[in-house]
Image (cartoon, rainbow, N blue to C red):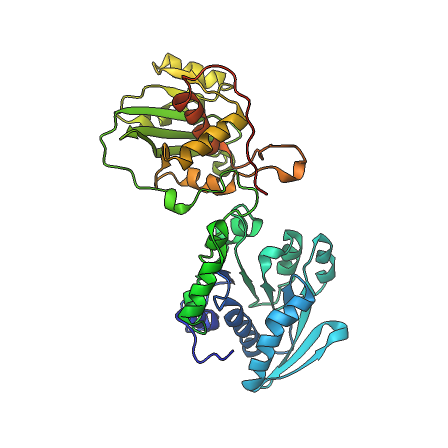
Length: 417
């Protein structure tokens, strides 16, 4: 494959460490995104050029899931290009080490595989001036943290690249979502950032995938791929709030003290129920707890001047229910059969009876993160994680849309692996 030019994003990767770059003060870089987007080439070449330009007589780490994949995907691409730029390199395979000489500087690059938790011990004790972690989302957190801890030389920097995994993946939550706090430059790549791909090739890749895998591999989004409860839900199903008029309003609530509290405002327009706004509070993230009175005040703000038919509340939230009743709210205890509620909610979403609107960010996030507990071995059990907006949505569907139904129904829920 011949590279005649670099895209703007690739040029940013190649130059971010230079004194003239506006990103020069950053201490780390993350390149994530679609497959075949050109991030690995730009990242690897920039890492070696940076190391050989800024340091002499230092050690660097180059890490992949396995050493063989690292040699195939990174070293076999980068070292020949360095050689064409005038570098001389020699690999000692028995030591998993490459010595590179370039423009009067000589440095050593050590190769590591981060396959599992035990790999962290392999990298202990060595000091690096910088480290490149290729496909970092495939490595255990303990290995990555140990690798980062090895970079104590003045001027050292951290380099990460990967394709997306699920939205609750540790690397996404600790590095990508907190990039600014970590003084890290995050660049998101798509196939359009790879000038070596023709339009015909891009279209062929786009035809290969659908659903969540299209979002991951083509759009480069961190989307849940395995065991999603609502695995049919796609971004195209998210709609703007209609102009109205709305003829009925409800609020559904999943109450928590240590766990998050989620409230959804539902309005009916043209026979369709829209989740138009939400309130979501996590005491762990905020580092404080809210009282029942504070939650009641937030519910009042969510309701605004609308006439709320009833507040549908988690039946176990006895103290909060009492506070709401004292304040004059009509409260209905939610129907809380989990599997039946999931089935009803799935049907309502598929049939367009309920619609999630664009302002409901936490509900949309949990649609990706709400998964079956496949590892437990129990049949049809959901993980009790990222489920608070999911619960309040389920309460609304089971209690309002189907609350008038009586009798007993036995059902099973389809679970896709």
